[in-house]
Length: 460
Ligand SMILES: *Cc1c(COP(=O)(O)O)cnc(C)c1O
Image (cartoon, rainbow, N blue to C red; front, side, top):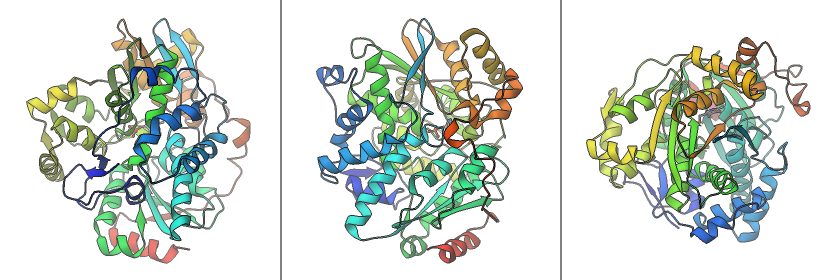
């Protein structure tokens, strides 16, 4: 199994190399040269299996010989052992045709644990086999950072630096990043927005001297291994609701387009997915792009759904790559235009995208009202991100079965939930002392040199 860059101008890599590298050297994102498929019988056989077994069967073909069967089975078992729910990704029913997929039972209470916990295990196996050490730098709008820190804390082959936008993450998110005591964990509060953090991360990857010196590795949602880990719950959810006999649609609260792109991969593998609905907040560039073809970046608004406060959606590049018939040069051209503020998706590519994706948005008031209403009429306490999904899904409900992804636990965003419902959602008992632990964080200016110097000096 080989991996190629969406910009067509970087070396082909194995799964392990693509995982350890993150961003391709031409600035593109790695995708499999060919997407493996599963037959209807193989898909039907997944129904009712333990989550770990589904994970193994869905992901194994993408790994080639990077990991042995036993190594990979062990990694999957360890990755999900710490989850607070036996089903790992349980579902609750919201209405006759509408289900909520709870992806928030991992150690940091958001769906990113599904990918990050697995990546931590795979990095450990690969690096100790190679006798190497890497520096992981991640940019986060909140949940990626805590999930990465939780997955890599204490691993001696890894230093983990997380850049988050100062003052723009929730208190729970911040504390999950700043309270781990391990020396290899470094939380950096950048004076800027999430897009600034993400831009600095890209700049570091494009500074090849720095990149090679510190052995930079990325675990942001551009990392192919993360996308792959997220493909699994589309299969587990859909087969438990009657796929492949029934077509299932999914609505996904979307920021960086990683989670929903995993749904696209599931569909390409053969899962009968009818529609993938992109749900955005007021930062609705994806909704505009998918409706009109216009991908023009603007100001980033701070909302009660900070993990979706994004203008540039990194993983959208992967969707564009397929929409443009895997033409790396065309993608490279669009990304060059993006540097100057935006691009227009060609008519053919837009139609290709619209074959799979639809979209909707929820503003602050609508999101709050959905949290209020979901508690009143369904007895369900939603986090604001999940509420964006539920609101958009309800607008789009048709005859088919809809699954909305609940991306975080309500206790991760207690202020917004309390404002909407009068109830303050408690943290699960296993993290009840989070507010008492002491914090460790470094504030940094939005400047590449300052950041690189800091990272060089702090490595253990
Ligand atoms: C990361 C995140 C999202 C957005 O997911 P993408 O893969 O970036 O589209 C939505 N909700 C929550 C709670 C998140 O942490």
